[in-house]
Length: 251
Image 1: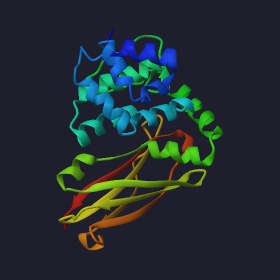
Image 2: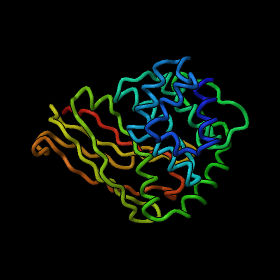
Image 3: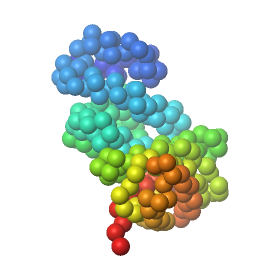
């Protein structure tokens, strides 16, 4: 039985929560689900332990669109943990297909494999309508949790410069505005620019909406705490990706 088949069997029989069980890896091993890609066992273990499964479950349970979230998870598994992109994509795809989803929307045929990408083939109009309707039904706390799950940053740059970003909290401040509390830990050698971008479901809108620069003198005990105050051009329900981009700045 392949990993996709085994996950679909478990989820159909026991629900998504079974994947959080301490014995799920042993059950899947009994199904020989890891025989095709042996390293998929370790990757699935990290998908669970690093909280990606919880994020997938939250978006799925609240009928929200996944947007670029699956691709962000794959990139983070590679950049943070050094896990293979192609097998990480296979594991995430297997979970998505077990839920009947492709890129956050129901699928009618099997997922086409990609080395490192999950694509969305359904129309943007349906996605935006579903997002708005589902998002508006959430409590304020769950809306903020959903926006939190959409945040990405260029972790490769942070690794090269021995910096670490911790996203602490997201607060909604208006119909088209929100704040992100985050902390950067490390000792930069130069000034660092922080560019904040927000993209909607079409990926045609968005781009930089705010940019700031900080030097090593702004760090106290190798820590920099900041709040990004972001005003968007469109309703929060249409956001598909929130990006914090760090770059070195040289005079």
